[in-house]
Each structure stands twice: as C-alpha cells, then as structure tokens.
Length: 237
Image (cartoon, rainbow, N blue to C red; front, side, top):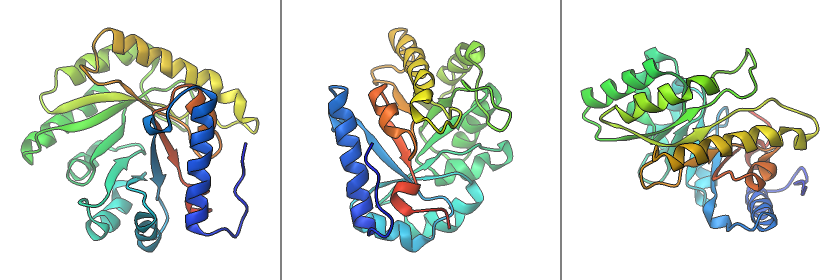
C-alpha cells in the first residue's frame, strides 16, 4: 500500500490519500465517487482545518464535543460538514445536536431517544445518524452488540427526527492491517441485511469504516465513508 513520505505538504498528503482511495476502489471494481473522505481533525488546530478546506476537503471528523465547540463556530458549518465520530456522552447530547451534521457513534436505544428529544427541543427537523456496532469486543471501545442491533434499529426508526443512514465500526488495531478485513466484511453483511429489510429507506446504507492504517482494506470490503487523520494532518497535535 502506498505510503506518504514525511515532510510532504498538506496538498501532497491529501492527493496521496485520494490516490490510495482511487486505487483501492479500482481494485474492488468500485467508483471512488462512492466514497466520502472524512478528514479527522481531532487535536489539530483550526488553521490546519482551514488549510484543508482551502485544499478542497469538505468533511471533518471530531471525537469530542468539547473540542468541537472551539472549532466549529469559527470554521463554520456553511463551508464544512461536521461528523461526530467519537463516543457521545448523553450529557453532551444537546450540544452535539446543535454542532454536528452527522453522528456516527449512536450506541444505544437510550441515546437515540435522547437525541430525538434534543432535536425536538431545538427545532432541528432531522439528524442523520449511524449506529456504531461493536465487532471487536474491546473494553476500551463502545458500540452496539450484534445481538442488540435489531432493537436499536427499531428504536431509531421509531424516532421522529433521527434518520438512520448507516453503520460504523472501530475494529481492533493489528500491525498486519489485512487481519482487520473480517470485521469490515461483517459490518457490510449486517448493512446488507438491514438494507434488504428496508431499514435505510431509499438510502444505500453507509459503511463508515477504515482509518489511516486500514482504509484501503475497508474500501475493498465496501466502505462508503473512510475516516482519515494522520495521513492528512500528520501525527496528532
């Protein structure tokens, strides 16, 4: 897999990631246009986000509501789309609903109800969400267990203002990136089952999976959203 040399410019790093996305899409007989690149801007300064915007990126991912509060109002929501990709504490639900365009980390029926209520209270008509599925069973990560997924899907479908658009996962990290493939494949299978049952309405059912270390494998297994930080911004600030 193509590696981006240290010392390259932001523009070169972005183009390098786009090249890797194109090549991975071609290997799996897909169009790169099917894949959304979310630049993970957590821990990186506002200036880096603004430079990435100037370079043509439009989607940015933040892990923590508190950090996003210091960035989103300054960078703006008119020119950027903001994705919450980290665990959402229920007491931060209202602020998340106010700040983010998409939430990738819905991980319980109770959180779904809370977000729906927050949308109503601030008069937000709809909030796109992805359900985070726990496939690696790591104590340091959250998510819905496979067996609980149908219940959470039903709950979201019953919410007036939440819009279920797909699934997300954070698999274990392996030095040999290819070892993560079964986790991505399983998420795709779950998505396909839900899509067949009409869980996403007329939407395709997004698959948010893959980061700097393994996003090419994720694309080969069907990812429609990849969350890439280090390969774009460098090591965390």
